[in-house]
Length: 315
Image 1 (spheres, rainbow, N blue to C red):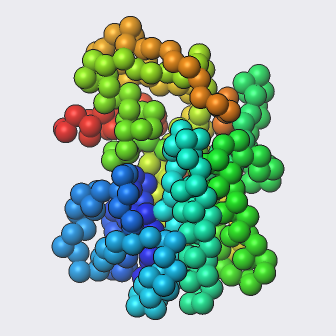
Image 2: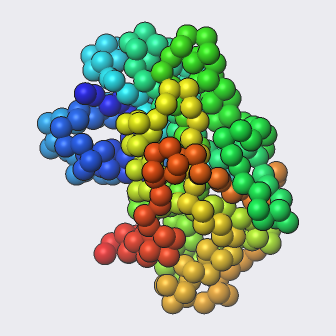
């Protein structure tokens, strides 16, 4: 069996490839990655000499190259981690987000349809929009409406709708997972946790948007990978699965935990002008995944943060 993983040299994609190799030593793994700023071949170093692994540098928007790769490898599954994912960048220039996240997904869906490959879309809880801070019991479910609030989340919501449309129109075997905020080793330092660790280690100011009370549900990356693996193995075609850590923390709490571990003063925290359209709170109900596939997070936030800091320190 062959699994094609797009965006596999990035943060979550590389973690997934390593997770799948440990879980399935005999499965052939193929990575397609454009190697943009966040993709690093060194993330895949443990697979370099693996005879059942192949790396291909390429763009999911390149239809001819994608169709050729599918013809060569005949994958049973295609797992699409390839995406532009940073909200700030999407505000500055939405065009690349529309191209990669929507048109690129369309190319992969076509290739999967022609070969009968199961397509799994890696999505995000951001497609649901925001929840109010004063409704602590509210959670996003798979039935929640898509009310994306940034160009990034709108591009991911559009891709999700395209995936489901292909299921409805062509009967394609597809699944979608929508995950909360990931963290862990190899994450590019534009995201909150690695950025704050990197700057705190250098005794640089830690820029915090607005009041810093923006709440996210945090999940260690390896737990995300295990959830996706279970969906591939036992999930039902046409279904959407939420993946959440049941760990809501606001940005200031996360940053203070980082400073405490590193022994750095809270005076490094510097409040800066808020970004446009900043969603106040995300929270995921992952009950469907837990009930149907028996998945639960294995790494709590504090342990995951210690592992992440140790990795960034080179320990």
